Length: 258
Image (cartoon, rainbow, N blue to C red; front, side, top):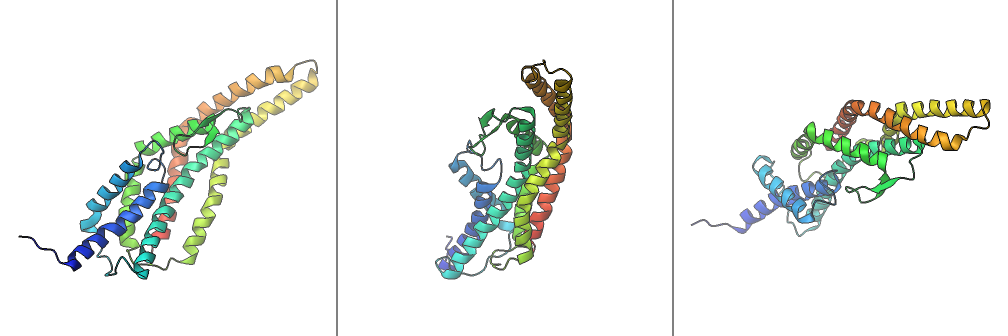
């Protein structure tokens, strides 16, 4: 007959609960996993199953009482680490939302918005198109599996019980927010530059033929030119996504390295 002592039960609970907190927090903030279409119960079940699968290979957790000040700090730190990892990946996806907003404003479709099913906010339809394409590419490149592998590696690089993150790594996390706007500009730059040339051409045409109704002619032409440039931009999304994901994974490794 199997018998468990209080110490064994506490060690098993600690070994499962703290990884579950980190993984669950990551599922709350990471794209795809945090989609509003994915029920909360499913996310909790996935977090529990992932923590249970990783339990045999995780480092031994600290012998700390859960109901104590130190146990509360360790639990809070696990949640913060998981949120930070998911948030950095979320910002990588936000690069393409910013790029879509820039393209939509340049081609005159800034007013055409749709509800993003992942974040639950309204974004331009061009941003929604780019986000859907990037999400499919992310799944096709096994990005979700790479991210889960990185989450499992984080327990080795940043074991449960570490409470002193380096200041330089936290500063790099804050600077990562600016990368969202810079990366979005780089992704949208070819299309925005092409639409700018079309605008310049219409400006010259309006000066040469003032009787031309530039608003009646220019608006549909700008939309057609924007969609043409968007089709030409789509094959390059794989390279942009791979570069941004590599930067995000490198920053996450810096964050979880003690």
